Amino acid sequence: MTTNPRRHPLTLKDLAHHLGISRTTASNAFNRPDQLSGELRERILETARELGYPGPNPMARKLRTGRAGSIGLLFSEPLPFAFADPTAIALLQGVAQVCERYQSGLLLIPVVDAAQGAKLVAEAAVDGFLIYCLPEVSPVVPQALERGLPVVAVDQRGIEDISSVGIDEGLAARQAAEHLLALGHRRIAVLSLDLRNDLHAGRLTPERRQQAEYHTTLARLESYETTLQAAGVDTAGLVVLECPNNSEEHARRLSRELLAGPDRPTAILAMSDRLALGALQAAGDLGIPVPQALSVVGFDDIPLATQIRPALTTIHQPLVEKGVIAAELLLEPPARPRHRLLPTELVVRDSTGPAPADIPDL
Image (cartoon, rainbow, N blue to C red; front, side, top):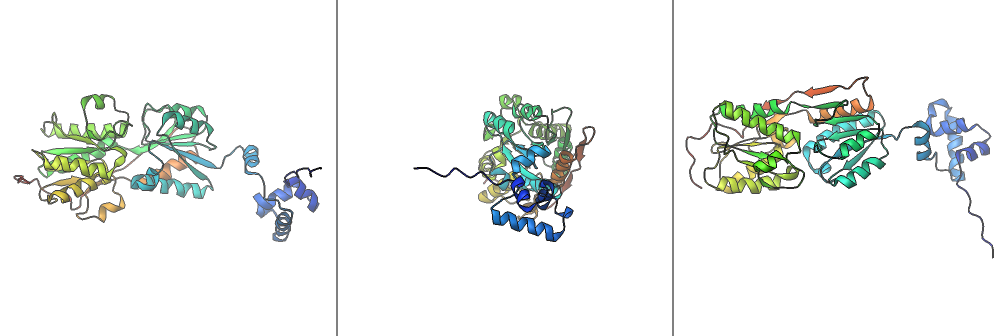
């Protein structure tokens, strides 16, 4: 018994031969339709459908053009984080706007595990990388640089000779702390983002601080402390609570423990609006009125900051614009690296008020 030999896949050359046209003309019907009359293009596409030709092979096209047609965004959180965290969503909106303009795709590459992340980076079919707030010691960073593709850092320091975009973290944190000091607050606590990529939730210890991996977190914390010290506040006993993955739930739990304990603060500096929201929820759980007995300042100015009650006093940063600029720097690389520092602004709403003269027991 004999079997029929497997038919080879139809190629663009086969299609052109069947129509009696050049391969270039056939290719233009798929890739450059403006080069053909509407009638000719429709005849080519109709014949392709009849013969079962699906169109040019995407991988072959990439080999010919030298472009993958997409960019990669590296970040250190689990993949669902990109679709749940408001700051990440806003950044992605800005990146996506530029990708749409340049007809480029966007590949999200989580690098929670360094070894797996390095493998993903090495194999990613992209035209360049956006490095978004990775630990400074991450081996993924040199892996991305070794690819020889354009790279842009977002909220990331310590990488030389590449373009970057971010904010003055120290200035923004100082604006938040000075606002509370001007209202008379001296008993202030901090809800912190991660200092290390290990999901620790709880009080920051000196040992963890010495091992800090995230520049953004450390820069904000140091600025809080410097500003308080300049106003005569003793920061030796400053309570700093780490909330991993920008987790509202961790912030709520840790804030409840803090506010229910002795010598509770009159104000909280939160390094994100989500952490601030957790603090507001904890205050509500304990019946602590805001801002009469507790003031809370956030960071980012996400849309929810104006929708909650009380509306959140926070630091506004241009998250969508940050994504736009980062993607533009990647898809239109300048001749020399450019470093864009975007402005921040304190937005005063209803979650902050004068420090209470005394703090009643719960």
